[in-house]
Length: 323
Image (cartoon, rainbow, N blue to C red; front, side, top):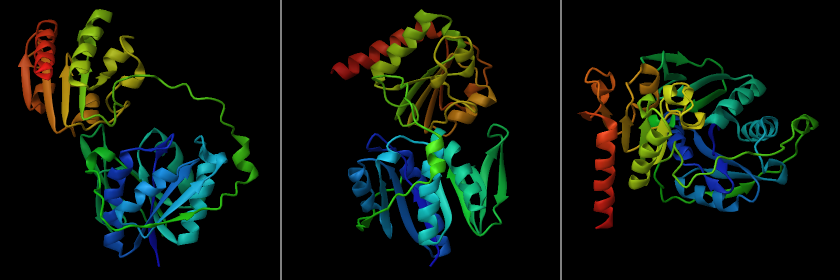
């Protein structure tokens, strides 16, 4: 029986939330094709992650738990995914279109001789998908003609899957890596440390643009983010100006986010930025230019100077939280 294989993403023993968004699409694909849904998680000492995935109604959860998979490397992960996909007869392999996913799944497709649809936002069936092009200004319909299909999912386009109540069994994968996996060796990870939530998974995001002007302006936006307990984001212009690190960039060439609440402060709303945040449930824009394109997308807009408005908003939020 053909099956759909969802590759879960975890980091240091914690399941990435984007996996549950991709799971929603995987469920749709399995239901349309009348196929079994399988989930694969890779890493080391990932027993808790594998167990947590048993609550989502998959036919089986496959756990590739091996010291050689503790740190992500493309070749090692590709070998294991191809091995499991072949063993279960998977005709569709699905993962999230994250930084890791964008590196991994093209290699998986190449290994399997499969066609690939990346960053998809809708499944139409029969191997046809929709994906954004031209910075999200258009949606392209693409069809993967190969028998085996590899798909990455734009997580912001799908709600996170809820637990189904049906318990799955966990099956250990016997990991046997070839010499090719050893040609790329993990050395170290330089991780940006922050007490704020992860930008791609936060419920509230406060982003600042080039109008922050300087370090004091950045601190002002950071103080509002901290008042909300939110993640900090930025426009490309702010990153290019050296005001904030590039890993805070939201947009077509940065990170795609879809929080419950998104603040665009001092951001004009170039199409490249909109492509990264237009899926947000509620968008609040603050800009002194009443003609700024961001106001066309915003649910709430305030035409005013951010240096006047943000301190007032921050203090009111802090006062409400203080009770």
